[in-house]
Image 1 (cartoon, rainbow, N blue to C red):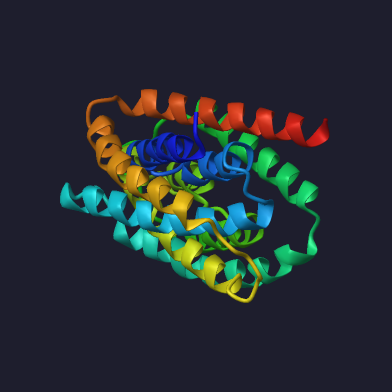
Image 2: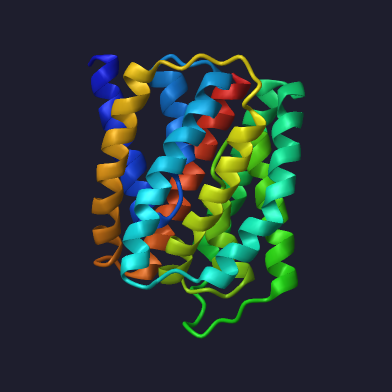
Length: 247
């Protein structure tokens, strides 16, 4: 299979994940760019942020249309994460790639385990501003360090920490992803990275189309099933990246 075809396929998977789960885009994007398309770690981190920003914006519009975005919680998360994302983005250039990859795997595993073992909260959950601020700052730091949107941690945080139902957490997490990814990308603006746009653009195109299909899928699948799928995906990716890094 050619690199172009692989870019199309990987982009479609990223879009489905973001549209249906509100997360998982960077978890699929970064490994796909490195292991399938031959990008370096630095190139993959930068390209991933661009891909996730565009795709998340498309997915967010789909969720806004059906009114399932909790704007207050999302904006609190986003605002709290801006400065940590910027600072961590600068710091990431000084940390070995192996350390960052292992940190990515550990955080993904913890988030996956939390989603698999935490019961879906009731629909009338309330938002705590202090807890949202703390969680948002942590997510921003993770985004800056690892070059990911942070949705794979935002969704479980919104569900488990702020008692927001999965149906609303999916759309709300996209706000956090977009804000954190924009800041992290800006922090990397001075790095010398050259991207292969002949592969990035088709990746983005199918990701955008997949995001709309993913949103339609999320309306047909029960919340508990989404949590199990999301948690299992996180654990599988965490194991693969951890083993690949250590071997």
